[in-house]
Image (cartoon, rainbow, N blue to C red):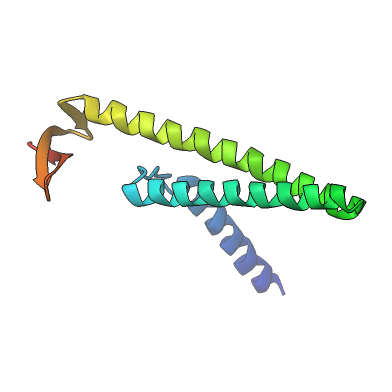
Length: 130
């Protein structure tokens, strides 16, 4: 019995220590993340419109349950749409701020901005120079 208690305690302490020591990394938002965010934002907009229609239908038919559910769903969807819109703007600003610079240093490496042309479109990327 005492042996089980020691193993359990050891496992619990190991898990806590691993979580405390494990480095936390922040991933930069890629173009896929931005595209996914736009799709999610558009879904919330469509759901908000649908909720408004259901709420109006409930008001016209004097069905209080349908009206409350539709209006509540529409308002929540409008709130989420607004939050996604603000989040998208933040990521765009952060990306623009990064690419505004010609170069930067990160973890002892120097990165220089390069211009790349693909299929007639102009893109930027950062290459490590040293």
